[in-house]
Image 1 (cartoon, helix red, strand yellow):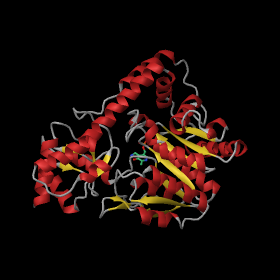
Image 2: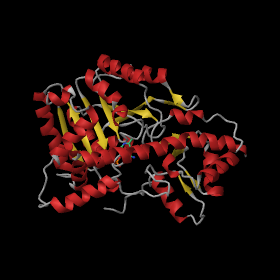
Image 3: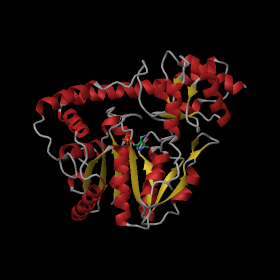
Image 4: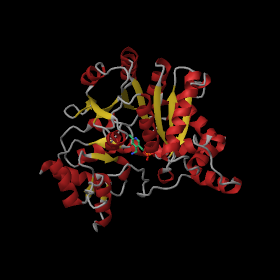
Length: 398
Ligand code: PMP
């Protein structure tokens, strides 16, 4: 039965990671994978996480199952973090949250939930988007189509084309929108564009699915959720998928959440039975560790303050490198305009290099980035930024 299976191409980012690992060049630079690294190039465990884990070790007295929705305390924290602690949907019992294995788990549960609610729904994603968005919705048997988003010419948002596409999307379809720190382009909606998006969602009746994988990595926890909150004030239903991989640095512990906002609390009860039955048929119950760690942090004012501080350090380090890249390229005599880098947000920047230039950076300089020229900015530090800028300058001149 397995003999007929055809090999499947591996994810290009995983291939890039493997090639980087094997590269013996001591100056090699990894700008591929979307993982935060500090000035030493290390993805350290946050101190707030270390302390919460110590607390867990001391306090946990049972390993019994935690239930299909996962950790209820964590779920409430996630709702408050995303929507704000006194959002009307929260107060009116219109939110249903399940904690999930990572943001990817949240998206997959959302996909199966959409399939139940409307099997004919098309899920609309931005051009371009995180590649896994497309595969995971298709894997759930949903149709996936793209709406205009990034303009490779202007290196900004393709605003008019985007709104023209959105204006054609019918009720019953789902529109996936990145809450902040768009992956891969780094170009986010402005608040005015969120307002226009919201108006269209109301007019057309499509259901927004907000993917918030980087809350706190753009401008701040509340700032990054401003678009979502505006949308949630206006529309009656939406889906939110969030992740603690980046902002709590809990990548391998796989912790995220899916939240469904319903029209009223009676519908929320119905939604809950469906959401939990989706969970039951995939993994039954989520792993507890990450949720307990996040709960311990958010239950404690001291640990929350420490988390804010560590999150701000990560955010500020990334943001400071945006201007530094521009300055270092200019210092290398690069004349092209790279000012767009400071208009992008979050972990990534689209540099706008050609495939040939990207290949040359890899073969001649051991500078690794994905084919779209998306770079994970946290891969840069004071020891490699000059080398990186010189390498980019030389391929631009070639
Ligand atoms: N959505 C987007 C846009 C992402 O970039 C990521 C992580 N790369 C995720 C969701 C999922 O994150 P995770 O499963 O690691 O929590």
